[in-house]
Image (cartoon, helix red, strand yellow):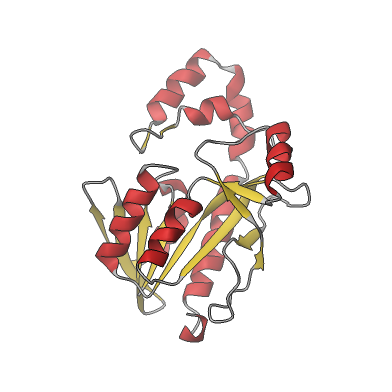
Length: 229
């Protein structure tokens, strides 16, 4: 059985809609685990939250509960390289002949804070040489290694280097300290800053197609015969 870990409900939604006989369980840590069937095989999807400290704690709980044969961490990432385009999907762990995937490799940098703005992204690219950025992989991958579970990182570019990311509004949509989404807090912020609404809408508009593409490719990979695992 494979375990798919995803930071947010929003990123996970297109996958969860396709699972058959889906059941949902919430753990004390805040982990939400969905168990279902895809292509005739059991699949568990754990929503672990964005960034530390919750992503690591919840990922560990998901692995210990599911005891999977393989862990896949997937979700959005921000591009640091100017050559990366919106909607491109990459393998963000070191390619392994024993775990072949259909995706090209990209070097991923994990940070504890959101990186937005072209200057900040280009500086991070210059400092690290990495191609894209997330807030989870470097914290979750060692947990799989400790347990001897094969691990894959898969990311899709949600925002390019020069994307206009409404970081002020997005920061109010998620409470990183408590690991919870806070849509009402964002709504109140937008009420007081109506000029930010159009900016947020422009940013969110392509994300539905992006998350659907990620779901389709992940599910196609997961249903591939076990020579891929």
